[in-house]
Length: 443
Image 1 (cartoon, one colour):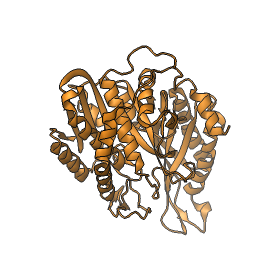
Image 2 (cartoon, rainbow, N blue to C red):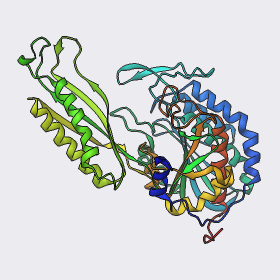
Image 3 (cartoon, rainbow, N blue to C red):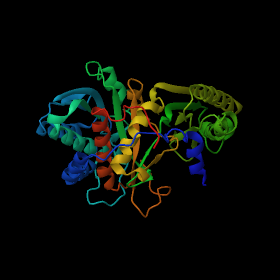
C-alpha cells in the first residue's frame, strides 16, 4: 500500500460508510446528460476562451444571466459585484437546496495549446498578466448551467426549490476588495432563501477522469495569508558593512521558518503547510536595498495549531531579523482567509449512494485530506454541505504527475463535464425527492 492510500485509510476509513442505502441511477439524469452534453462543452469552451479575474467577471456573468433567462428563469445580477443567483421552483412542495459554481479565473498565462486557449490579459497587483481558467471554474459554471437547464425542464414534476449560485472571486478578490462567498453571504444570500443543504463540486487534476472523490468531515484546509517586511539599511553592494542587508536576513528567515512545521507543529494531529509565495527586494545588482517584502500562506485543519504556527512565525521573523541587525514586521490577514471546508458527515453519508448511482460504485472513492482551500467552506458554516472532486485528468496520464490546478498547462478532460452534471443532478433530485432519508441498512 503506498503512502497516499495509507493516508486515506488512516484519516477516514469510516467516513465513506459501509452501510448506506443504495440509490438507483435516474433515467432522467441520463437523458438530460445526453441532451445537454454538446451544449455544456460549448459553454465551457466559451468561458475558457474569455476568462476574467476575481470581481471582474462581467462578460461571464452576463453570459450566465442570458442563458438563465433563455431557460425561463429570472436571475438576480450584481450580487457581490458580479455574482448571479437564480431560483428554480418546482411545481410540487419540497425542500430547498442550493448549488454553487465559481466563475473567476487566475492570473496565469495559458500554455495548453488548445484551439480555444485563452489569450486574455489583465492588470493584477499593478502588473500586466495573462489570464486563464487554470483551476477549472469554467467547467463548474458550464456544469451548473447544464444542471439548471435539466431542472427547469422537469419543473412540473419537481418538488421543492433550488438556488443556483454563480459566485465571483473564489480565488480571492485583490486587496482591499471583498468578494466571493463571504460577500454574497454578507449581502443576505441566505436571508430569504435558507437552504436545507448546499452542494458544490470541483474538477481536480489529482483525480482520474470518470471518477469522483469525496469524504465526510474535513476535506480541504483552512487558508491564511501573511506578509513579512524586513527593514535593513541601504548601502552599496561593494561595502555591505556600511549597511544592514535585509536580503540576507530574509533568506535566513525563510530557511528557519521551514522548521516551524517540520519541528514545532504536532503533525501527528493534523497536517499543516507554511509556504512563502513571493519575495521582493531591491532593484539593482549592486545596491543593497532598505527592505525586503515577503508574502505567503498557511494551511491548517486545527485552530489551535494555526494560532501556534503564527505565533512561532512572528517569533522567528523578529529574532532572525534581529540577529542580522534588521527589524521584521509580520502581518497576518486574518479576515482574508478561508476556514477549513468540512462536509457534513450525515449529509455526505446520505448522498454517497447518489454519487455512486451517477457514475458507478467503483468510480467513487474517499479523498485524502487536501491542503488546498475553498471559500465554499463559508456556505458550509451556514447550512449542511457536501463538496466533492470530479476527475479532470485523462486516462493514460498519471494524476500524480499531471499539471495541477493553477498550472499554465492544466488540461481538463471534458468528460468531467458529463460526470459533474450527472453527479450534481442525481444528488439534487435524490435530495429533493427525499431519497436516503430512511435509516441506513446493511448492504
